[in-house]
Length: 131
Image 1 (cartoon, rainbow, N blue to C red):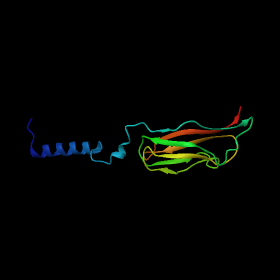
Image 2: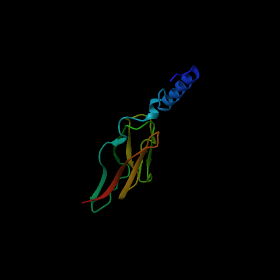
Image 3: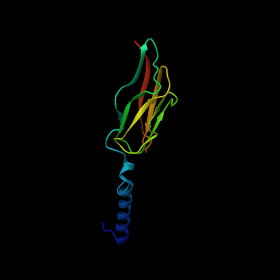
Image 4: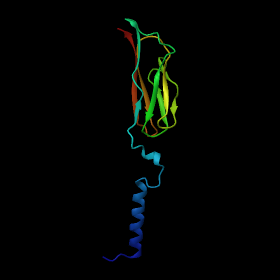
């Protein structure tokens, strides 16, 4: 099979287009991270006295670390009037935010962290009666 210059040019342009669509030369953050997107830090539970829901307003439940995924990360509380976060956005992987209790009583609140590509990681914070 004999190829002329026009055929060779067409093949090279097609190959370049295919390689470009694979992310060659694009911002490396757009491809995500090889590390799984997850949250780390501990157990986020506030215990009240025996048989009583906690009076926890003003309590820091602990620090949460963000790993993997693609920065920046938006941070949400499903019930911000009960548990809020010290940051609404985490700019870089391996940075953290704190969970802050702002109301008294028993609760179950989900904290949702969404990365730049829309992937989600969650954790649960609880306030329970003591036993």
